Image (cartoon, rainbow, N blue to C red; front, side, top):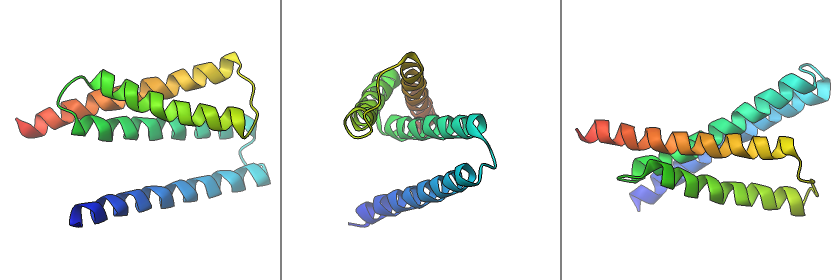
Length: 124
């Protein structure tokens, strides 16, 4: 029970940070403080960092095959993001979107590999 509360606390902290980031990014976009390109870069960097963290956490739980764990985690998350984009926002597939999804997938794989390596350092 205590373990579930710790996980719930981590999820709540992550969601609060996500909401704060999205609020700040929305304020910057509404007031046009950053403009289009810096805002898009910040948004992409945050997405890549989020996928990296997801891969890292998944990698710390696995004993080997970090790239497979990252590929499965990233693929699952990308499928969810892709379906939301297509079904809800009616976004058409374009090369920029595919490059963005490739960056997210690669960051998740790298996070998973690093997570497994950090786990091995702790065990040694």
